[in-house]
Image (tube, rainbow, N blue to C red):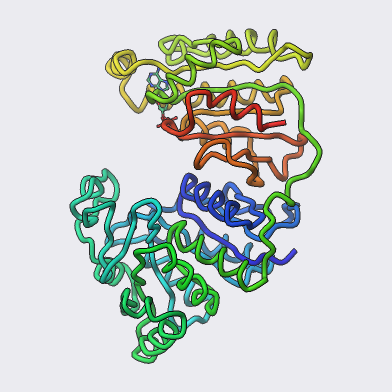
Length: 429
Ligand code: ADP
């Protein structure tokens, strides 16, 4: 297998978003959890997105892990590697965007790297090097108060220069508007001046296509899902990839018992659980008992096992820890926010593990952290990305599992329509 595109994402949800974007653009895409084993068996795909958790760790560690991902992707033939960062450029002056970019550029031999977090369809645009979040510059957006990476400067040329060993230049919108050749000439000009990275303006979708075409001349680029979309479209337009993402999915249904887990306490999820009560048995965990012992997990698994026999009329089921804001606040004040959250995530992971051991092959999980805990516990090496259930939430087919095929749907709290659980299961055959 020769990958047309390799991606290294600095967090899991960003990786899922990119993998979904590439799939929608027609690329057969696998997302892996961490750097895969050397011998991971993959179906024939166009792109692999390696998910790391390297956004806020120490810079040297982020570089080491990114390089391990790079080696794996190059080993599978990836001619181009996208380092996927957050579309709000989340980072500090200590990194990690600059240090990882410097390392990947050094390994690739590229004189200059294109960098843009722009993704106009989600309101992230870059003009004169300044990143806008919706209608306001980054430093006036809620990101100025981010707990880990507060962003106080919207000028990405300056931000990146503070993190990188190379000088940083700008490809402005006017140059972009003059087309691919103008951008190539400007890049060559910057590279000749010893500038190793260029922030690229992008305000419209078509700008991403120009950027994608030019980026493919290089071995590395840096950006969010927007440049991923540009690269995917350029690969399809250039004939390197046939836009046929669905062909990667095996025709055979996975079948088997189905279960849903909800750890998200978002408004949307609470409504989705209420609607699910009409069509499937729902067990509401007692959060107090979850935090104080293991009995609640055992009770949930015993309840589930009685109901997930794979016979017509049996299953699916839903197990939820979700509670109203007042109940959540009460539990947090008794046990501490982090301790309560962590205990419930681990209990949900225990339940996911028990369900799969009991034969569940189709699993829907609501909640970003809850999904992460479940996927880590199940030791799923990666996913083939399938059809979208709701915007940003695809059906995932596990790859590289020794215990056989499995389908998952993982959603962040606010995603999905009111019938999300039924919608998901209808597509997870
Ligand atoms: P979302 O995607 O909606 O943010 P997450 O799963 O990321 O959902 O986060 C929800 C957090 O709330 C998790 O840490 C989870 O363990 C915790 N949690 C779940 N149920 C409760 C509850 N009843 N009380 C307090 N915290 C809870």
